[in-house]
Amino acid sequence: MNRLFALLRQRCPVCLRGQVFTSLFGMHTHCPACGVKFERETGYFLNSMFIGYAAGFLILVPTAVLLAFMDVSILVFSVVIIAETALLTPLIFRYARLIWMHADQMLDPRQPES
Image (cartoon, rainbow, N blue to C red; front, side, top):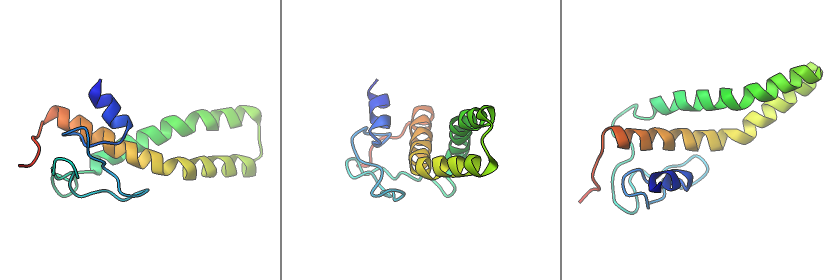
């Protein structure tokens, strides 16, 4: 349960306390609380892209289906989907990375830096 709260609060996957993000898209390189390096290796966050794609798909498809059933014009359809994508991109980006880091920590645990 602690891990779920840490993930929702966007905290470090190792110590569950340190903040991961510095700005909308900026990340700390190391946890400010325990010092663990977030990016284990080059290309570490590529798997989070798959999580982001899946999340975006699962969020946008219901909207697209609803708009299709409402028989809106292509302009309205495009504007709504583009606006939803623009608004949700930071949230999807952050949580895709966090889900990947927490899943990776559970599969291959690390200890805080000494």
